[in-house]
Length: 137
Length: 82
Image (cartoon, rainbow over all chains, first blue to last red; front, side, top):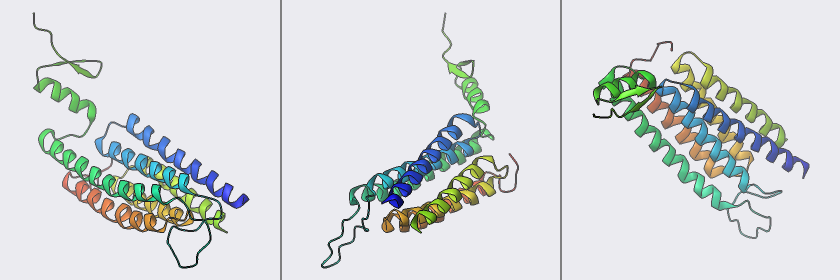
């Protein structure tokens, strides 16, 4: 029983660590590839959190065997996470395709330089890093 | 026993997650991401979710690393320092 509580505690702290690292990478880095790394870490942390939520004390994996009486862990978050992993890889592939297209058009992946180029191209001006529309007199 | 395995895989997972963010080389970051995914799948087995562990090992450590490495080659960051 104490072992179960220890496993749950360790898994929750691991999930929190992954989520915090992912958010840190999303807000801190300016390179688009590093932002995608942060997205992947965040997704892994959320998956670990959901699987830890389904864990029960002294339970077995949710596979039916004849004559089984032991309790099972909750299988519904497992199905959810199974789908979320595959969807996460699809999101990564889409983001990487957009990164390749951006690099081919602008030749850089730094978000500040990209914001400046896009602002110049579309006829807007930058105020402290955020492109805003020029007011026509 | 199970708690020891969980603790070791959590330490490997968080260590390689730090390594992903603080490696200079992008290819090394991708390899660290793959290691993080494998440690996560070991943790899923400890948490009684073998189906999710199989998917994570195949998709997270396999396909994800391959598409990331192909993108790095396409945009010329294969051996570049940030």
